[in-house]
Image (cartoon, rainbow over all chains, first blue to last red; front, side, top):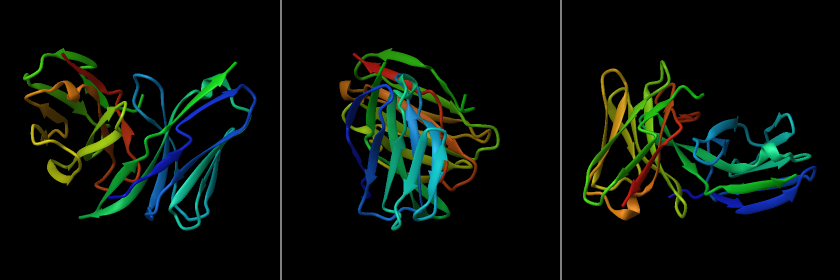
Length: 114
Length: 113
């Protein structure tokens, strides 16, 4: 069973601060995705990283895939209250018959205080 | 709006009952996935269908079953419901059998009383 550990589990910061959340596994993934979920809604895809060492930027969010494709980080610069939510990472691994299975971490619950 | 539609949005039912959750995938998506999300377990993969056939199975209980119809919509059937089955049930879809990028619906909130 592939497990994804996310840390920290909870994070409460002031508006304007920077933060980094981590997603770690002992397994290798073909790709890794980050989602953001607001209460009562479905997760919304933010980014997919595929290549080891890949860095992607989405405005104030920077995503990095580890060289060995086992871990990833999400860095938010100058956090805003609108960044509040549950951040989920999900690793994709080939499960046979042309299919990939996603394994989700339990998420990091971020609160940005105005 | 992800394009994945789930009904009902909220459902309250008694223990021992049976419910059916429905999902319409994004237009053109052949794969449908079902996930269960509870506070303590996070997002748990239940089952995947691809073009009408079961493709992968996760932590799905024997009391639960699913199917994907020729028009590609899917239903998740939950029977002999227990209090612990209370959770958010998400449907997601992807373009092909490869689950690299999937898009989630808004979920069906099930409360078992």
